[in-house]
Amino acid sequence: MKLLLDYPDIWLIGGGGKTTLMFKLAAAWATRGERTICTTTTKIWVPTPDQCADLRVDSFSEILAGLHDRPAPMVTVADRIENGKCLGFPAEEAFSLKTVCQRLIVEADGSAGRPVKAHAAHEPQIAADAACVVAVVGGWCVGTPLNAESVHRPERFSAISGRQMGESVTATDVAGVILGDNGWLSSIPAGAAFYVVVTGHDRGIASALAGHANAGRLAGIYRCPRADGPLQACCS
Image (cartoon, rainbow, N blue to C red; front, side, top):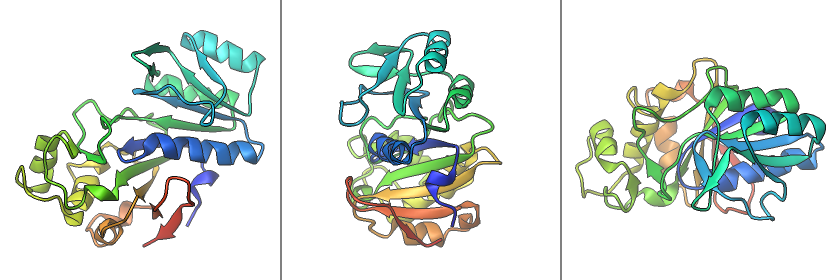
């Protein structure tokens, strides 16, 4: 299985730890001496100094010029900050940042802090030529009630999975929303490698994904039991 760190650009979607994973992968690239840019096509919390000490906020043209003049081993870039969050750039602009770095990682949708979600029509925002898309899901969603406290856009999740509102979410439901023809899979560019990372306790999600009819579209499945722990390949 090709390693995530082998791709020139990664686009993160879903919920359950996207931002933590973004900075983990970016730090691994930077440690290898590869200039890395973190950004978003939606919005993310302003990174802490431990996550990324170099934050640059400006118009896209100024960001691009600054990165030409002052390259950095690892930098987060954003268009502006509102209510404590960095607002990013359109997907194709974000993709063009590859001209000033060796590795690019982009958070491409939000989940309002929920471990799993269903996408609205305008989500996610991924460049057409993206090399790799990683779907992130928090394993702790399994067993929780299908409602707005546990699932972002629960009504849409219900429509895709067939699970009734208020019933307990199952691993099979999650796999169906990720890999179903009307789920996350429908938004992945045809040429992009597609991975899933299950954060926290797996609770059967990896097995449900591996057994789904569209599992052949996946380049691999990883578990990440702890935020500070390594990714563990499985079901590849």
